[in-house]
Image (tube, rainbow, N blue to C red; front, side, top):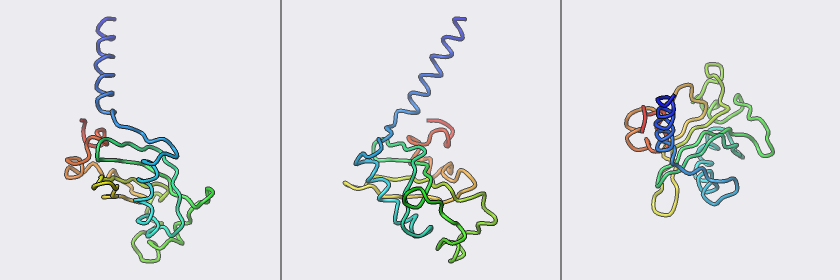
Length: 147
């Protein structure tokens, strides 16, 4: 029994170390700054206007990561077949599992956040690539094989 308790403490300590990021509150300046930095990039792909439902957002130091659901203001669903990225033949909605999600990575540059990498409707964990992990492991440790 003692061994199980010790194992539990070790696992909890590892989780705390890996998850020592901040999750900005809804309506906070930080959350707004991050979403505003990403919005023009996603609107280029999906058409304006776009709002985001935050599934998860992590910030640690000068790095941030989020998984988001894009929608039209008021909760309207985005018709992927009618988006600019489909019109430009950059995305085939027939081959994708759906584009109802966005993942993004930001870096803080001076006083502003810059959306450095993002994907709409990705079907793989694109951010587990080692060059990305080398920079962003602090906010995506589970995708990068640990802290």
